[in-house]
Length: 612
Image (cartoon, rainbow, N blue to C red; front, side):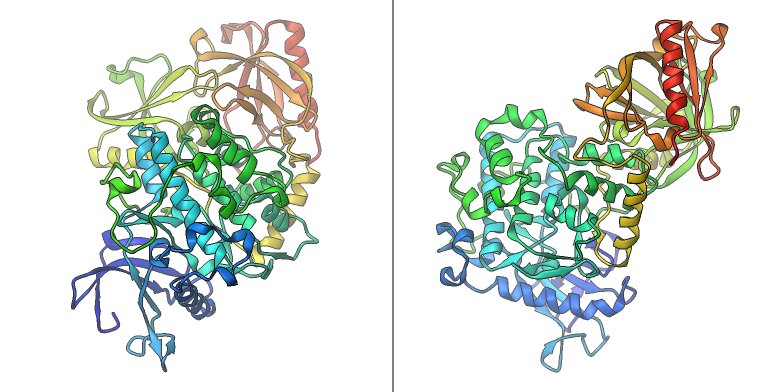
């Protein structure tokens, strides 16, 4: 590459990739220094955008390498700790780039665009995922050091008049112990007016600010002024993950995804909820971790009204960071311990890996069966859909069954072991909505396939909404949100679930449960809402969740279950209408009296007749 660098082309060399570029490991042939080489793809989604993206990347990286200038910075975005800060301690260093006619451009030898930078070891996302997998909790000192280091990086970006727009753990990387920002080719200058058709701008739904969400959803808003407060919100959600078990907004996103056809639709419905959010659903772990950290996030950073949100420079003076010193005055190598990175073996992952869609023949232990008895296992066509649900086809009843939904699977402990009754066994341990422990047992005859399934199932836990882009698709998805509103599925001022119109205790049969087995029934308080959704309170998620949306129930049929077919005398089932030619397993419920059963059946019937 460029006559100076050697770049590996094997899969292990990929450190990240997007729609327009791929980044690989390389070395400087003369010095042996490891580098990262970003190559812009010839077959990009919009190849005409490649030169612009490339030039923007080079321009921003060059700008970030210049010394800080207090006089040129907005006073509200400046902090005294930037006065002696070395840019190379905060920002990824540009080493080289392809040139044509003495200007940034395609390399004349192969007509490809290259950007060469220092090589990162891993992302903050990688680090946090490994901590979660090991069930390790960061110390308060580590959270303080890491949080301040990252806020200082973003404060430095803002002091230079730039806004990142797509801040998230995946775009914060460790370079020899220092956290720095990557993917800066999407940065925009503070106050820049961005058009909704600008497909150069990418963003991630679970880290967007309410102001960005409103810009995407409201039809009359075709342009928006880019402000640092957008990054402050995204950074607040990122820092929350230092303590929480998962991205703060992921539960809400997965909840909406369950009732959407695609990630794109779910992303925009999520935005419709976010634009009117009054309070961030902060995980209980954060409030319990430290009162000052909770105050920093809830009252300084994650404030829905952007005019009341603090700047990153102001956040550096919060009491949580008292006596915390981050050395950014020179370019010395920082040891992992200096940055409180006590785990030096973090595995660097290459990108998000795309949406999951995996299928095959899999054995499943029957409800009530014994793990060691081969006769108690049944073989099914099974798959993990793009939404992250684990499904199988029941040929006996010719129905598709969602065995575990994406929310449940994403929080499960998944383990593979050899020597099971069906060869290779995968145990999926999870918490039900009443915080009880349950296990689904799968089996595969082939060891390699079993390991592959284990990996795919585990990857659901790290499933993130795909990166979204401005451009032509926005108008189409805006229309989708409007149509959903007309179907009463919309989020009105944060009230997605609606108010109860019929509420009572209700028994629900677990997925693939035996109606005659008392142990397969779970009781919880549920209600039919004013928006036509079947809703319940989840102890696991500590919030109201939709079990069936009005769109799911529309056109469904409600039938009594014969007394001799169930151990519950007042049972009934909700047979969902086919969607896209697929017939789903019915929802099976039971009330505590004939009067309540009739009340529930009437409520379901009314929702089923709702026009959508």
